[in-house]
Image (cartoon, rainbow, N blue to C red; front, side, top):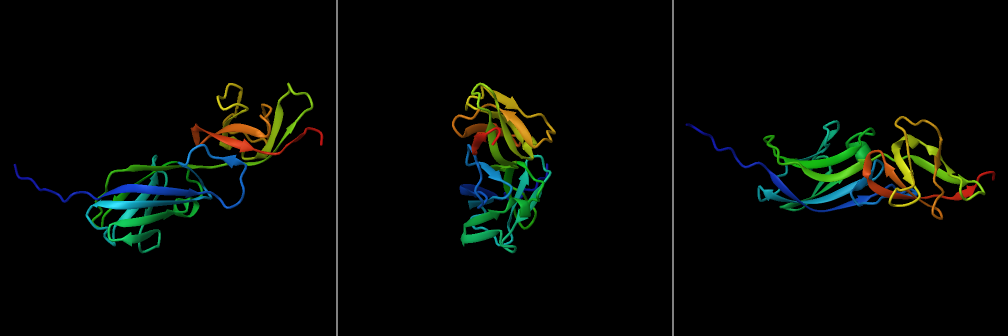
Amino acid sequence: MPAIIAPPRPKVSLVSKSVQQDSLPSPIRFGTPDELSQDGRLSFYLKTDTPSQFERNMKIEVATTDNSYDALLSLADGSLILQDSSSVLALVDPSKTLGAGAFGMLHFRPVDAAGAKGEWQPLAVLVRTPTLKEVRCPDVPEQPCTLHGSNLFLLASVASDKDFKNAVQVPAGYMNSTLTVPRPNGSLLYIKLRDDPATIDTLALPVLPENQ
């Protein structure tokens, strides 16, 4: 049977990556370096395997795994910076590159000038974060406390222990500006974000008297 041998698809290797979160202080500390906030910045360093040199018209496609948001990084727009002929630095500003509504698992792949696409590779988890202000607690130690903030529906659950044995689940579509939570361990609570419920993050907020 007649056959045509197509050229090999482009292939790159992820060498390293760096996540820079928003410059403004946040009470949330992410539990994994794979989490990226919408107002953060992601840099990742790639080395080309096929072809042997990074062609100047090659692009890197970054997208959410559900294909809702997609972007192409290129040398022309400055989102790719060549280090040498075979390696490149890629820069992603999520809100500008993918859009303000993007969230969830991100992956990437190379795209050559002819439109041939390489294999998808995992990159990061883009998460939206609520604005959290303070925790107010009554004088009675056995009673729960109240978390104050906005966009609390972006929380999946809140606990006072990292095993989440004493946890409060946040209902989908929760619209209130306060949430009843377990009493913090000192000033520390543990949270899971709705965009990445498999990861445990920590939350450090001022704990104030209930009636102050």
